[in-house]
Image (cartoon, rainbow, N blue to C red; front, top):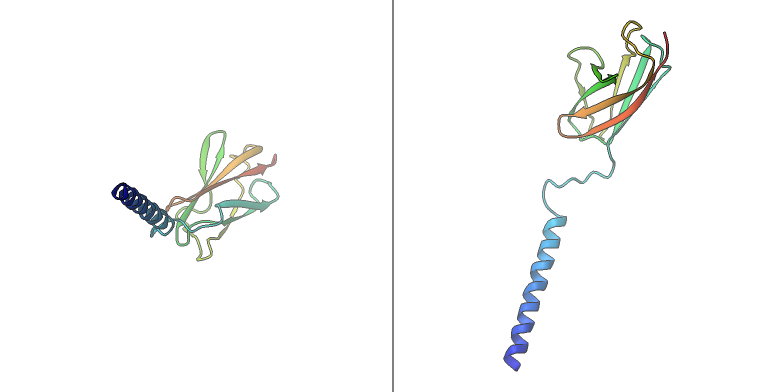
Length: 132
């Protein structure tokens, strides 16, 4: 009987050690995301085609390069000047200044602006475009 109790105790002790080790490893795995803020993107501007639109992002991975795409009626339009690199700062933020689409291509309404980082961050916001 004593032998059975000590075997049972040993199995429980090993189980406890394995469980504790797994929990500790899961909580301290190198490379695990430590971000507390989800990516978000916002715009400011008056919605008039051709006028200035300011874009701000937060919660992105520092150092990643962000591409901004405006989807109007399922047609993706890259926002900003061709070849312009938008790089996220150390604090996870970025900012960009561009223009609303020109009056000849702008479609009035509410459209999605999608910010996609090359390290996996992504965020979407609505952009209101007025009639020219």
